Length: 270
Image (cartoon, rainbow, N blue to C red; front, top):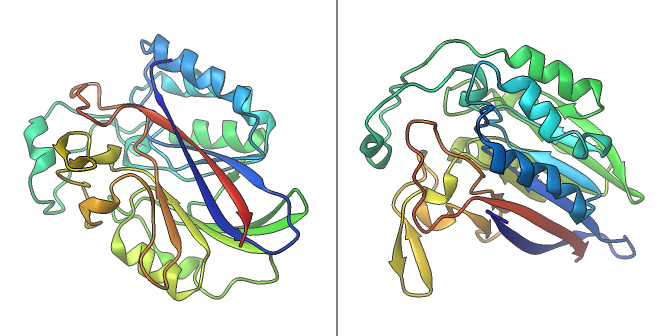
């Protein structure tokens, strides 16, 4: 196994509701050549989740859509929610990887347009819900979940106003977004969501040894570095789970103290 399994428990379900197992993955950055990663993704069905959530950046190559759909084939038989990230829209381009560690000034270097509509159609045809600009309701283990999402905030494609507002009749309200910019988290917090799922950060991608583990140098957005991966919560705010993701840009295949990962999150009674 060439990835880490991150496990966490979040006590957010009403009393009497059965636990819900969520497989959360992000940032596959797949190309046809990534045979080991593809095999790992195919193996995730063994975790037997009740719900799958992807927080984007599936693609890293013009030919990657059928590769992604094949890798996810077993999981696509399960209920799923997804949003897209910047790398689903534009192919990666060579650039100085050290710029990843510098302040984010909003400048973007885009490659050619990727065939994201084909990916969208492929995922939705198998029953997964596109939450890029939508709210939807799904029932898992007799728990009614209202889910909402935003398009990629790193590209400023997000418009939270399209999905804003208090949740309707449900047992649990969750948010799904690719890049966990504070404007997204604040909007979802204001609407009293229970849990937010995000990716994008790669866990910092390069982390330094630190007392108690390691420390991210950046999140590639305005999220504080202490929240770069895993489960965190600020007082009176929703839980936030950030996946450190599975892949990297094809031009910067380096991860230091931040191994590829997939997360198995168990929602339990409060």
